[in-house]
Image (cartoon, rainbow, N blue to C red; front, side, top):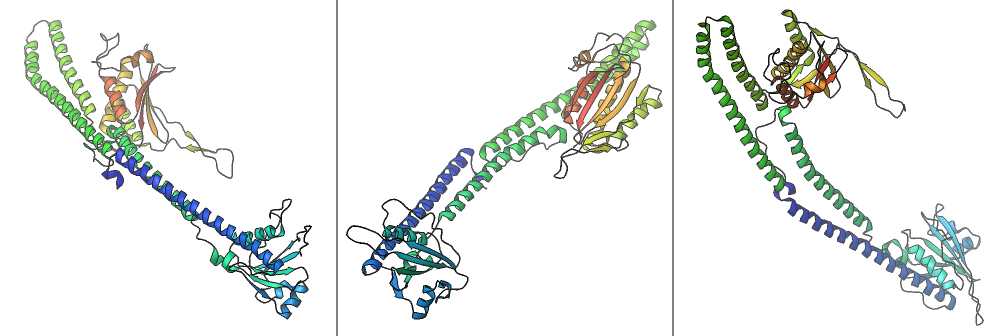
Length: 483
C-alpha cells in the first residue's frame, strides 16, 4: 500500500525514519535490559558480601535475606552429606558444594564457609568464579550470590560456618526468579529483525514493480502486450508508465498512418497500373511491351512488400500456441506439390543434460525423441511468411533448400540451407537492412525487403535471424522463443 500512494522520495524518508526509530528502540531496550541486569547482579553481589560479614560477626543479614537454623533431623542429613533429604529439596535436585576459605589476617583468623546449593535444574560452575590474589572470602561469597542472580533457578542454599550448625539461607527476594528484572533483549532482537524484514520486503516489492513493468515492456511485441499499461506502484513508476503509454500511442498512430498511406497509395495506383497494362498491350513491339509490363509488376510488388513490412512492424497478429513441426512440414509439402526442390530433414535426437542430486555427483543425461512435436507460442501467419521468404531466398541463390528444426527447452530454430550458392553468410547478413540487395539484382527478382521482414518477425518472437557458412552453402537460422 505504501508503494502505491507515495513517491520513492517519500517512501525512502519513511523507511529511513522507521529504521532509525526501530533501531533506536531496539538499542534502548537492549541497553536498558543490560543495565537492569547489571544492577540486579551488583545488588546480589553486595548482598553476598554483607551476608558473609553477618555470618562471621553475627550481625543482621542484608535486606531480603533471612537465616534459619535447620531442624535436628535436617542437621543430621546435612552432617552426613545427605543434602537431598533436607526439607524443601528433592532427590532429583542438583547439588553444588562450594567451600570458601577463611580470611587470615594478623589481627584475626576467620572461619571457613561451606555452601551447599540444591537447584532443581542447574549445577553451578564454580570454575569460573573469580580467584585473584588478595581476594577476600566476602568477595567470593558475593561472586557466588551474583551467580545465583544470573539464573532463574530459586536454589535452596545451606551454609555452615566453621563448626557452627548448618543454616538455611533464603534470599529469593534478592537473587530469586521473582527478583529478576524484566529482560527486553529478546524483544529488541525481534523488533530489529522484524523491522529489517519489513524494510527488505518493501524494498524488494518496489524493485519488483519496476522489474515487472520492464519485463512486460520487453516482451510486449513478442507476446502481443496491451495497447496501454496500468499505472501502479510508486509515483515515479506511474510517471514512467504514463510516458510509455503516451509514446506507444504516438508510435501506434504513426504506424497506422503509415500503413493507411501505403494502403491508399497501393489502392490509388491500382487504376493507373491497370490502364498502363491495357495501353502496354497495344504496343506492337513485343520486347518493349514486356519491359513495360515488368516495370508495372515491379512497381506494384514494391508497394505490396512495403505494406507487408509495415504490417509486420505493427504487430497486428495475436500469438497463439501451435506446432512448429506441423507448420514447417506443411510449408515444405506446399513447395514439393509444385515441384520445387525443398527437402525436410529428419530432426535429430536431442541430448538433455540433467542436474546433480544429493545422491549422485555426476550429471545424468536424457534423450528427447526426434518425433516429438515442437510446440511454440507464436504468430502462425507471420512465422509462415518468414520461413517462406527464407526458402525462396535459398531457391533463388542456390539449387535446393534443405529445411530442419532444432529446439531446446527455451528456443526453437528453423534452419534453411541452400545448396550451391556462391554468396557467403557475411554478404547475406549485410543485406538485412531495408532495400539492400546484392550484386546479382539483375538476375534475381526482389526488392530488398525479404530479409528485413524475416528479421522483424524474428524479433517479434523474441529471437533473431543469423546466417552461417556450411558445407552445402549458407544456412539461415531463424530462432524464436518457445514460451
